[in-house]
Length: 449
Image (cartoon, rainbow, N blue to C red; front, top):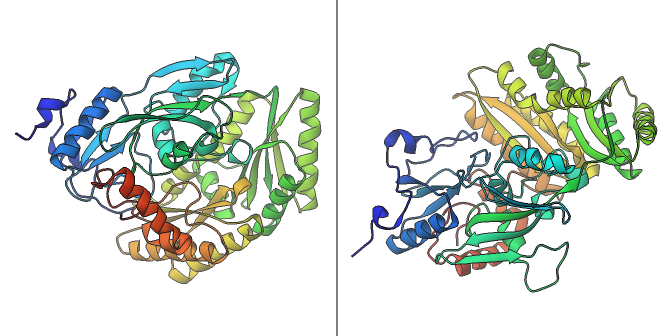
């Protein structure tokens, strides 16, 4: 007799239409189908029960957390069950002496940072949104601090995952490095929920620097800002954040936050030092490099309150763009290119936008070459916004870049995987088939087995 959800799933399955319809939309503008139901797991045992039931009855499973994904990873295509792990939000252990924390996948980055702050530690990966760590691992998220600390792949030591037969596996070890066997842990990071369900993570923590300072630097044009950023990296300055925004971005922020920024391209920079005196020297050096590239205006912040206010401005960019274009949807690209190609990518974005008759704002984690472009669209301009994204990806690939620096391959960018990886896609499909022969997990995303 075929088991029913009520037989095997402790949390049960929520089949209310109003709940299921909430999973059919995301920031891409694409629409998914209404899923079969929603299972809310509270433990690894709940995940195992759901996966085993789904495998027995042939129902696909999409793991979800805070649902901040931007590339259609979580849109159901048919009769899937949404496996919501956001309630698995326990910080299991903080090992201060080992600089690690063991957490469940529903723990958010802000929740973890607040918990480890009393130890003088922090978790550095900051994609902007208060995403869950499980979701951040599933997309290999990065963000504003990646120039110094890297993304999730560098900051996850081990994972507990549930694979398609319901088996629980421990991948990786709680050590700084290992050369033991195949690196299965990193295979799951960035897999977009297509290989299994993450139920526990051991993540790296880092000491809070003795002294930190921030500066906002405005430049006459994009090239000057990018050249200054490249020089900062080239001089080995102790930069922990290095963000770029264009003139459209500063104009949007002025309208949203009450003014104060010159309407020109700008860099937002964080630096670290061993003392307050050393910090002044570092900030002086950063501003000297900026002056070499035509610095128009600068704003230095050294106190915690001033630094928070400066970075709050940068983090409010997306709400500012939304406020400047009420009633619109928003398409966000996240191509990444080599440092020498960043200015060209930004110029290309504005040129393509002009040709297609759409508005674009560019920003990005310039420290790792990640260029974001935000295009507002209405029903009449959605196709043009999609064409804009296509052309930006095509340009990035043509100069040796990648279709996605941090958002990952979902429905929106799946078509570019073969262009970027060629025959390696055959190997990826073989991995998917070996680990998930029923195509149980998040089918139709990343690639088709």
